[in-house]
Image (cartoon, rainbow, N blue to C red; front, side, top):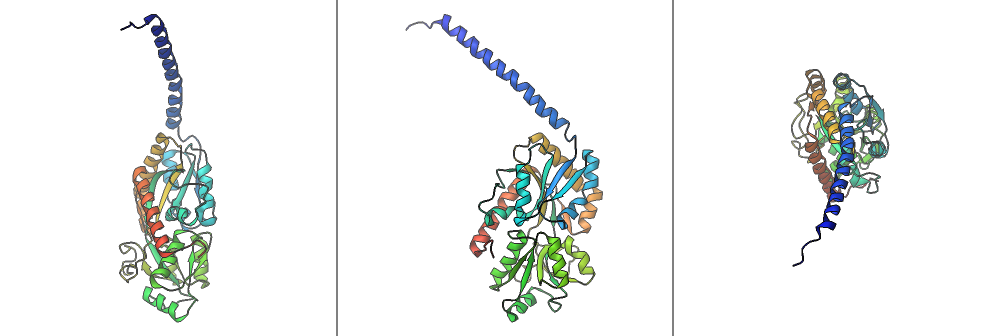
Length: 338
């Protein structure tokens, strides 16, 4: 066997090793820069995009703002960008620089969008990184005392709808929102036509409900409870698996024989490509705020529960919910134009 020509091999090996060393040296500053940026984060105010009109979502997050400013030593500035079932604001967040200075504050409607709008400019899995689920909300069906004072529960609501064919309507926080799905689900399980009336947020929907221009809504307890105390709305069902601690006398939809549930939550995501170090910094600070005594006490008083889940837990929840809503939408034939 012929001996290798070491005189030609050694120089080539030397050149390869030198090239690898140069690549390694070039990478060190980049890593150091990335870590340095994360260590100094945040160095300026953080924008929080809310893809709905002013209402219960930003009202709940405002409880967090003072504590977050204390933890991060920077203000969190809210920016409402409503439209198209929350897809307008969500698309803005997806296109933002992945530097941790633009967050998306969203709710369960985030996992509904892909099933209603197949041509979205973003993908909820590929274009976002979950940070944390901040809270879980008590959710309800509420009727207007101005338009349906005689309705006290779901059976009476359905009976009214059958006695007034084609009349019953339900206010939603937007076409393609999770409240749209819930209203359509009730229509499906009862075989009762219910006309959705779409708004750009829960706040606008509630204004018309109070005035009696709509009959009922699916929404969160935080938004409704003060108006209920004024005698303008009546809560006829809770949509969580268990009764709310704030209104323990109101039975769940399942207890009343209607399989309609609304697992509402409030959570934070960032654009894909955001560094793990910044995501972890955000998660740690947001969780600290959610579980702090001053924040959790206010949250619980308004019908929500602090959560502070990890990014991975939140990722699994989003994927699970998206699959669940897809199945319900397909099985019940719910369409965006409904």
